[in-house]
Amino acid sequence: MAVLHANKENFHEIVMGSEIPVLVDFWASWCGPCKMVAPVMDQLSEEFEGKAKIVKVDIDENGELALEYGVMSIPTVIVFKDGAEADKVIGAYPKAKYAEMLEKQL
Image (cartoon, rainbow, N blue to C red; front, side, top):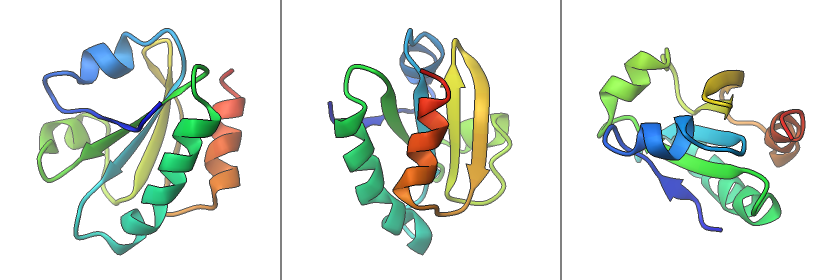
């Protein structure tokens, strides 16, 4: 499964309505650490296919979502389970950290 891209129109359907955990990467094209995290998100989408969704939200295009979820610095990665925030980290981390966040929700 490829990384999904969410915006204010489809966020509720993709993330909040999901029956499986969703890892959301709040990012921006000008953010260096976000660029480092991007390939990790691609890898996670393959490793967790069918078990979790990996979603990216561009904060420049979706500032309302960033405000709604308290994103003050990027990258911010939030894991949602059953429509609620289950875990959150701010900054770029190794793939193992994001995988651990998802594993806890499976």
